[in-house]
Image 1 (cartoon, rainbow, N blue to C red):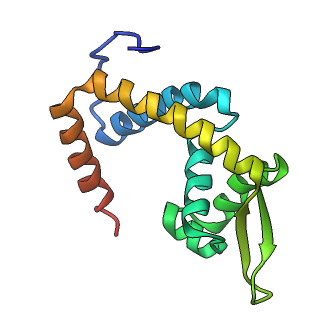
Image 2: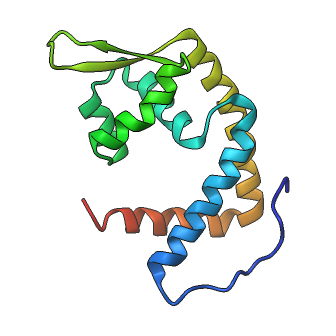
Length: 147
């Protein structure tokens, strides 16, 4: 299993939230390292993927899809726009801004998708089918704590 150091199990904290945050950071670092050749982070890939799927979503639509506020969303979109991966344009209503992928954004997304598939397989191999299914169930349950 590529790039996974077998130091399992790490000592846990008595705080459930801290354990989840530490695990989240570790998984994010793993995916970011795997996606690095594409020039995107896992967060950026997710944004581009949703923008592509929703076809010119508004900032409100994107913020809702990611469960983040618009300020955080704008901060995350800025490097993608500056890097030429997307354009922010006016919608039909002058108050509406929409995000649209550029050809560079589509190309980076294709490369990131290929690398993401590798990361997904590595995670599946590392955790095993049963643990992965249990993890997905627990994460879904945790996310439902705040509708």
